[in-house]
Image (tube, rainbow, N blue to C red):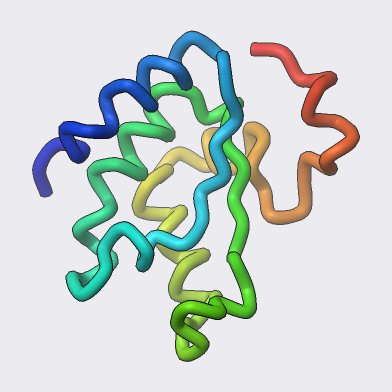
Length: 106
């Protein structure tokens, strides 16, 4: 569906170097009035760069858009990270806990 947003290059470079953690959440904030699929290239690029430095979050209760389906957002992960190993590297909704973030190394 295209390449990631051009402005995401700096973020991807930081991520590749392991200089940050990124919370994957609120894709509707980037997509705005477009379908959530418009965010897929960025999601895939992030997963490809460093799945071990990503954390998924639902952003529930979706205050900016209270009608969001959290399951719909979770399902995006399967599209962004088709390999199960990437979905469970570090960003399972159940882990890592905030206390273990500093203990993880690439």
